[in-house]
Image (tube, rainbow, N blue to C red; front, side):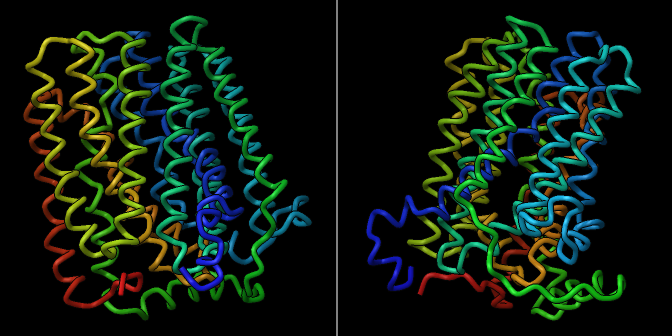
Length: 417
C-alpha cells in the first residue's frame, strides 16, 4: 500500500476500486459455466453421449482465442456506446449480447445440436469479449500495490457469479425446467450495468489508433521485449492445466456416481464455493504478506495434490459428506492458486496495452479448459475415471520446472520487500 492507502485503514478494503473489482468479477464469472455445468447437465438428461458432451467444450474456443480481436478494443471506441468511455462502452455492449444469447438458448430443443452449438458459441464469444475489457479495466484502475487485493476481490465476484449460474440455476432447472434456468441466468447479467453507476472510466493514456498492423504489433512488441516472455507464456499455459482438465467433466462425474442435481447444486456449488472463497481470501492475503513467488510454489503444489481427491471419491459411497470433504479441499486449493495466478498475469501487462496483453495471457490460461478439455470425454471413455484423474495430476508438473527458471530470470515485478 502507498501512504494514501495506509491512511484509509480498514476502509482500504471497501474502497470503490475493490467494490468495482468484485462486481465486474460477478458479471465475468456468471456466463463461464453455462457450457461446462448447465449445458452439460442439460444434454446428459437428453441422453446425449459422453463423447458429444465432452466435445461441447470446443464452443469455448473464444476464451482461448480472444487475443485475436482484443487489439481493436484497445485502440477503438465501441459503436453507439463510445460516450460511456472505451472500456465501459465495450463492457456494456458485450454484456447485452450475453443476455440475448441466454434468452435464445432457453427457446432451443436440446436435441437440435446445431442450434445448441450456435447459441453456445455466441454466448462464449460475447462472454470472452466481455472478459477482455473487464480484465483491462481492472488493470487500468488498480495501481501495482493494489493488484493482489483487487485480484482477490475480482475472483470472489467471479466465483459467486459462477455459483449463481451453475449452482443456483441447476436447482432452478430441477424444479422449474431448463428454459426458466437459462432466463434466470440472463437476468443475473443485469448486475453488470449497475456497476457503471459508481465506476468511472479509468484515466489512462491510450496511444492514438493508427495503422491496423501497428495496433496489433505494438502490444506484442512491448510484451516480448521483457525478460523471458516465452517462459511466461508457457507457465501461464501449464499452471492451471491439471486443475482445469480435472474439473472439465465433474458434473457428469458426479451424476454417474449417483449424486442428484440438487446434491450437486447444494454441496458442490454452495459448499464448494465457500471453500474457494476462503482460498481466494487466503491467497490474496498471502501474496501481500509473503510475496508472489512463494505463493505460486506453495499453492501450485496444493492444487496438484488435491486433484487426487476425485480418485478417492470414485471409491467412496455417494454420500454428501464425502462429496463435501473432497470438494472443499479441491476448491480451497483452486482459490489460493487462482488468487496468486491472476495477480501474476496482471503484473505482466502494460497499462497502455492492457486489453490485448491480458487477453493473450488469459487466453493461454483458458486453452486447456477449451481445446484440450474437448477430448476429456474420449479420454475418460478410454482409460476410466480413476486413470483420468491421475493423468490430470501429472499434467500439473511442467509448471513447477518453468517456475524454477522464471525465478532465476527474476521476472516477478510484484514482490513483497
